[in-house]
Image (cartoon, rainbow, N blue to C red; front, side, top):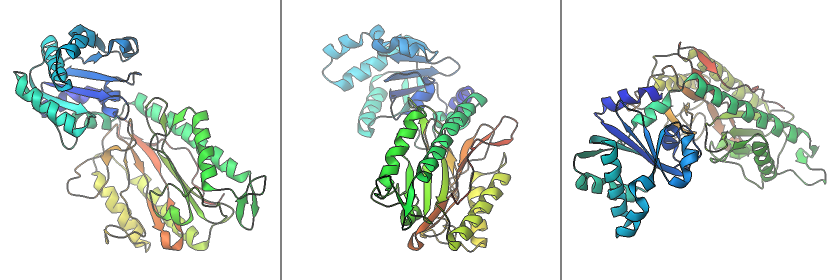
Length: 405
């Protein structure tokens, strides 16, 4: 959470941090400006002090919605700089020099946000060389912003829950749309008798998102049959919707304007499910229930990946624990954190570098899956969980898990 930033900065010996770049695709920046509707800028926070937001003067009023102290770039004579300096790099270095002098920034400064790697490398090296009293610092792995974002307070969890309610509404509306069609020779058909395709369903889902005031910048998965057996296949637009085939609908929208995300997956069969699908789905449902009961504060996240593999192997399914190259059975990690990005801390992979322990404030997905592409089906169930300050685990998902529609 944000109140942890001073401690996280101290852990790295940081005297200040800078989070910069365009807002779009830059969740760390959006986090620091409290979701204000701006195009980008610079947030500078000295350890032990409140952050300052440097922005374009044309965004000064939108920037005020951040609740931060706002300083327009015109205060630093930015336009004059662009006319005086021979390159954008020189402009950037001089702008930072003036900002740091005005705010009294010195010592070890961490730089975060999104930028082209080459441009960032040139700028950060130039700052290190040309601004006295500054030591540039960066993180390759988890940044202080990542770790602060990984835990959410009750207000953030409630925003995520509300996105989940609307995402569930999209799932329900999609099922009603499918049920409104006729069936001919096992294939869903439209009013004019033409077959219903996955592409047509995709377009309808897009409308449902819009009606629920949701955006899907990362897309979504609505895939059937063999496509459902490959976890990140989004669905073949030309594929027909058939009775008895598995349909994986993985829905991960966010609040309009690059806000908080939700992530929910359900698997459906229309009309009936073949016996082998029913049996595998029961195994998956039992696994999901076991995990929901097992999550607790203080346990390493990789433990739950291990539990998942052990459980599914006990039911006869291959997993990446016994065969890391398998493309059948359980083939991915159990889950991930969710917030201003659809994938963020905590992660659940079973590697020695994963030392993450569940703690109050974590919001994360639980999404075991079973995939058999050569048999023409795939299954996944995904819910979002939040651990409150007292350590209780809450399921923020509210859509049924029935297989057969």
